[in-house]
Image (cartoon, rainbow over all chains, first blue to last red; front, side, top):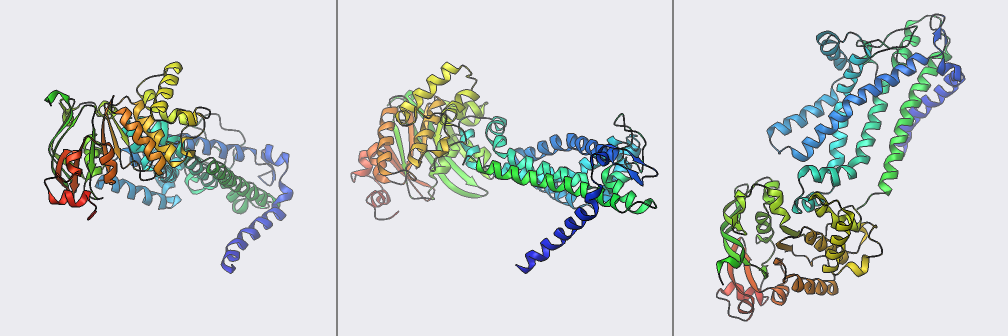
Length: 267
Length: 254
């Protein structure tokens, strides 16, 4: 009981503090205006939009690839040393610090593939970083579908793919979506991987193509908290509140989704 | 009986799991329109035998077979399209597996993957198979409800209907009555007697009386060995040639 409170208390303190200090900053203008006067006034619109761009583009890359990889590993791959090595690599990849991913992104996407510091390079870096999460979540939900269903389908002459498409995937989709939503919340908060690959300190305009740089909420928080002098206190707190609000609501959505689908479970 | 009436011919079949021999030197024939019983205590290799026949072994890592299995005159290991082979062999598992689909879709699954899309055809197949499995009257008003919500006995009849929807030539039942009440078991046994007119049936069971009631011929497996195969009446009326068979059917062990 005490331990539970020790765990919950810091979260509550952070939330309350953020709401008290940052709450007054949140307004429609804050969400829709550009920063002004050396980022000491105005809103955060370009950063909010930038985070949205980065996260969605990262999802476009990581979700199909991650799901395909998980299907292969869970449904097709034989249990041999190669598969075990791949699984081990995925687990290790999930543990790589984000700053290392950031440097990999600089080397691979910014320099080698010559995307420059851009939304594309940032999103790809984020995608690589979150790929293991998608793969592991998908694999787990595929494996939670009873093996007996597969055997029943195979014994009727169904191919592996027919079995996966008609029985396994429809029943694993809740777990997969939960994984994806959790990934969104993690991606939205990451700073290191985008810092060197495409997120900008300040831009007076919105990005037009994926080869442009963009502002992002997480980096913007870092900037207004530490890099810019004379920022009124409520501003960074407002940004932090918004960011944590996005992350928590994503998590809540994922939990709600899981509960909803669990109640609909068919076996 | 002439050779042409054999649907399945098994010669010197041995099954190994990662080095261990589970079943050795099985030689038997399953004739057309007969119920072939396989009895024996658990662990005697009965289920592995079924998995070898429909080549489900290829999905279980570590299982390998030697010897030959001929189905409809063709060596199954040379059968190019594994899926068409499995389609000809319906399987009913010990615990009923209701796919997480509606009753209708459970039975329409096999025809659908085989390419039947026409709704009228599917309706007809579903009704026919459910009737043959003696389930139609109980579910005809709720075909859209989930198959997994049926009772154990109904689900087992649903899996039989599903197996029939493949239009198999061979029906393999693996201890189908484990999770089924006695009344339903009797109903399914009646269904099987009826189905025998159209398909061959391999009935794996550890209820010796069930084999006695249903099977035309019976094989006794013990610890991975095919002890004896013969006319069911001979096996059960003390005319078995092996003392172990007599002991088993009389309930002295097992």
